[in-house]
Image (cartoon, rainbow, N blue to C red; front, side):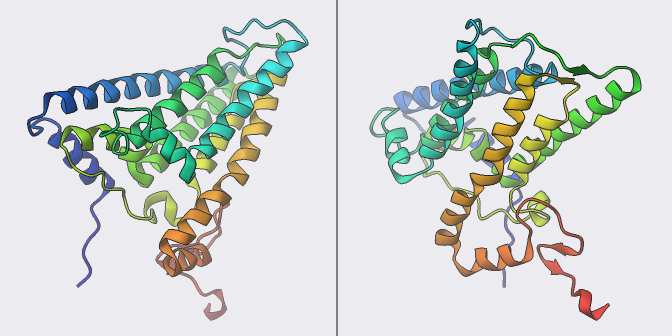
Length: 278
């Protein structure tokens, strides 16, 4: 008999409720909550910075590097995110993450420290950007309302995709909540439900959509959108190599049924339509 996989909501609720009555161990509990609070505060600040900065087409930020050096400074801000983000996902990166907490807690807190570092990187990108001061186009009237709705929808898709992938991992909660309960982190299974039924990389697709559905367009936004969209299309290839190694034939079957980034009519996980029989 096949065991039913717990839903993302069931997993995150069980994990969160477990932190309310952690087993004794003051140092462990304090460490867990300090890392958790820091992670979620920085995560929230990064998300708000992203939403606000892109809404105004990267025309409002705190960077003040003089031209033409601002071009190189902004490029460096863009490059630092995908480079570090991908590096930390490798074997060497995981060892580095384990060193960013007390030795006995490092491995357990790795998902929390990873999310914290990624949040700091994103916060820096969107807060320290130096605007060019050039605005090409700004939506008005009903066009503004439509684009704002699309922008909001893109963010909702990103939230849904992150939830489907495992909210406890994406938010960094898995590490500190597991440490608080003195348990080994249990990672969610290979995601195939929700938006993952239609494309294999819904998080990256949704993030790319947020880059292109803004109501203000500037050279800054175009540069950012092209750069990060390229990352969203290429970086998941490395992720899929890890999944292929971890899940083997199961992931190969999933690859065969589900498109990479663009949904295909009649193809989704769990029910592949044979058009030849229509």
